[in-house]
Amino acid sequence: MRGLKRERILRVLLTEPKPLSKNELSKRATCTRQWVILFLRALEKKKLVKKTTVVDPAELIKYWITIHKKPRKYREYMVKDPLTILRKTKLTYALTTYQAENLVQQHLFPSRIDVYIEEADVPAWHSLFLKEGLYGKGNVRIIVTEEPTFYGKRKLNNLFVVSLPQLIIDLFAEGGPAVEAAEMLLSRIKKHVSRI
Image (tube, rainbow, N blue to C red; front, side, top):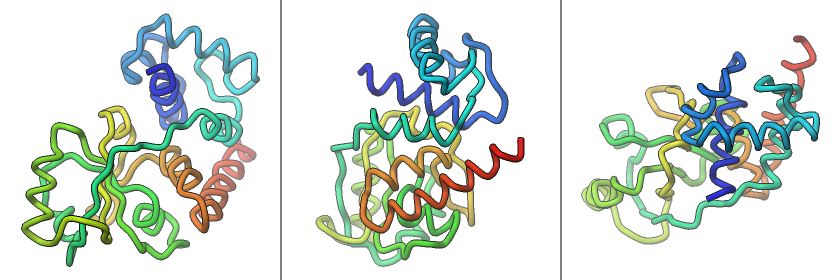
């Protein structure tokens, strides 16, 4: 659980445009205030944050990569028109990796659609995708995750996409051509910081 708590804190720090109080950070990261304070101290020693202000977002993302745990629980489906299904559903989700990157910067071919979902929704998603396709290795992968992973998600082209920091982390974890796309997104963050 410790790794997940750190990732929750990093996700909030990197997604919020303005620094938050420690209380607000702990509430949004769903961690105790004490845990937030201890982790912020460790990040301050590495000169990545000052109090709750991110000093260098690109370096903080690089640190996040070193502690990131790739999700292990997922299911795959072959579905004819998954984006239409996603646009119509009321279930909670957020796209990541190839399809999300294609919506954000259009560098990768969306060869697979990776979708974060909540564990409680697995039966509903399974039923939904079976109506429109088949269960087994295919073009859609649903990844079971905890609710804080959706923090900072946004809507692009009527589809929900993870926050930019989460997308970068997921692309690095994916490996292969996705790493190049992640580095391009990371360089955008570096350019933004240099103008501040």
